[in-house]
Length: 174
Length: 102
Image 1 (cartoon, each protein chain N blue to C red):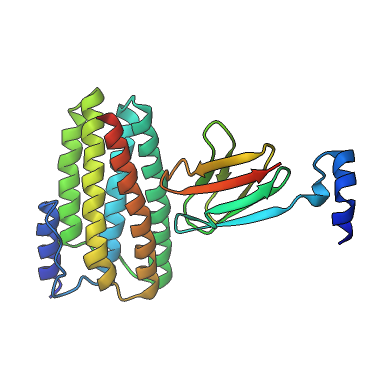
Image 2 (tube, each protein chain N blue to C red):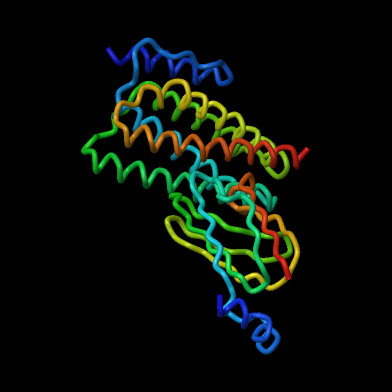
């Protein structure tokens, strides 16, 4: 039953900027928890790569902010699933996110200097936009547990700040 | 009432006496400083209470820089008069304002 909506979301996520329609069938809480955690872990990985590769202070500072915040949110998410005795469940959306992130990382790994900085920060803008869209239109409305929903709402507020921050840094590089 | 009457004399004698300094509370919740704008006097302390799960800072360009860890507090004692804008270094969208009277 749950395969269809998550597959649909996965397809939408792969199309990156396509607006996310509200799926007829909702992802379950264990799936939502997995998607949210995966999305955070992906951004932490990207941040670590940027901290290692970039020599631009703005980029490195931004990446450190991403690492710090997403680790804090993911820790909160892990504490919550433990408390709720929920086991996060892998699903097509998480898989699609992980696959797209692997490809992006491979692409970034080949770039250097200003090219890397530009590609990293532009991807951060697009990625936060995409994840925030998914949170807003699908994950938050689908979450049934009130505490999970609250954490997602807080996360959205944080990640919207990241999106604006990324846009600001991207603007500075131009 | 009494401290107010004694105020000018003591202030002259001791400079900015801690006895008359106020603590101004600012709360941080979901990446918002509240109230966003406060009025204070030289010698007053601003104390931020961070309800978020994230670390924040209250930073003035070329001025004070206060770390406010997650679920914790941070404070600064105002030493110079004037109006300053501050922001969070980690989340530059977070902005606040302090008017410091002499």
